[in-house]
Image 1: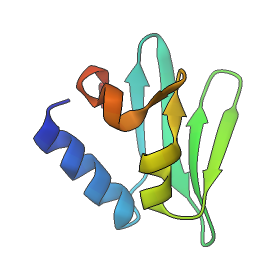
Image 2: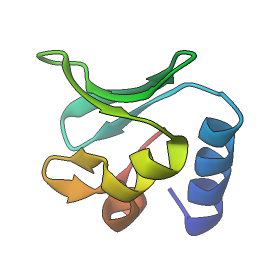
Image 3: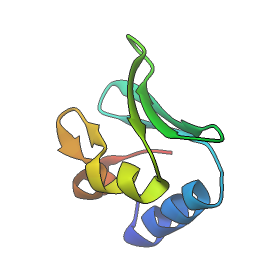
Image 4: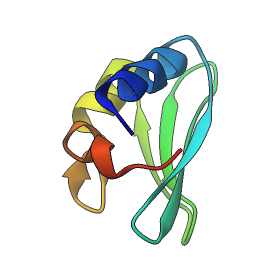
Length: 76
């Protein structure tokens, strides 16, 4: 994904959108409910929980790396 697409991706999450994406050979899902945001690796159902979308993007990791460091390699 390009930097512009990453900004669109982040904005969508901030306004309540839910997305799935692929990184490497794995599928991930970003979702939310009334209280939290979730970053889930589909295989194995490994889920990270965050209080805000901002926290998800600051602290969420995919294969041990921050999303902001790997966005160029994400397919959505």
